[in-house]
Structure formats: structure tokens, C-alpha cells
Length: 148
Image 1 (cartoon, one colour):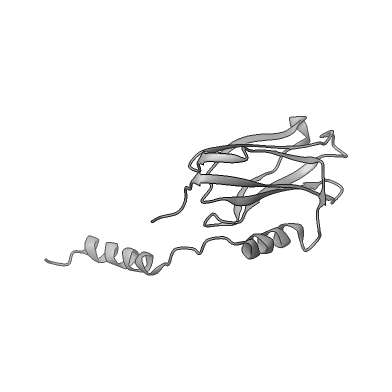
Image 2 (cartoon, helix red, strand yellow):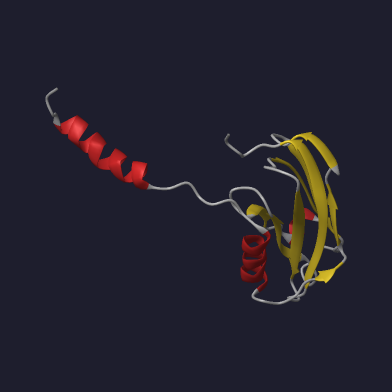
């Protein structure tokens, strides 16, 4: 095999990618660290956030989730950011939303992947700086995100 400029370039890009290791799975500790980073160390109060996700999930590949925050969504009183965290997926952050007061409603629906039975935590940051949260444990019978 002769080395061409293209194959040398491909090897130069491919070799570092082969050396990159897979990220470790999230754990309660890494989720706690991610939450602490998001909240700047403050403890969110429970309430104002509702997390609607099935308690028992047969297939973790596509799990419906709705996050809603009780807020008037006015210019003076609104949600600035919502973050959702998990314990057992490859990364502790699932999704973040940054709603505008113009939306009129702080409600988001998404489908997420869940790697295993785990705790899901949603935290909302309000325009006055307060933090509100909701958490629940979801049982997953057929996990996603995990390679055998």
C-alpha cells in the first residue's frame, strides 16, 4: 500500500480519535456535581416545577418527558433556564431550555433516552435568581445508552 497525501491526512485525524476513551457513565456524584455547577452551589427549593415522565418505562430508547414551571412568564417574573439531570446515562445533563417571557408558558415536551433505572431531576432558574426543582425515579426495563 502506498501512502498518499489523503491517507496520511486521514491517519493523522483518525489516530487521535482512536485514542479518545468513552466517557464514564454518570453517577449520583457526577449528577450532584453537574447540579452544583448549574445552581452555583445553591440548594433549589422543591415546588413550582412539574416533571411528567412515566414511572415505569419498557424501552429506554424513547421516553416522553414534559417539564413545566409554574410562572406568569412576564418581563419581571419568568423562567430564565430549565435544566434536566440524570444519574445513569453517559452524561449527567439531559437537556436545557432557555424560555423567553414572550412564550407565555414555560412548558416543554421532549423524548429522552434513559440508560437504566435512575433518578431524574429538573431545576428551573427564575428571573429573580430563585431555584426550584422536581425529581422522580424512573424504572427502565430495557435500557438504552448502554453497550453490552
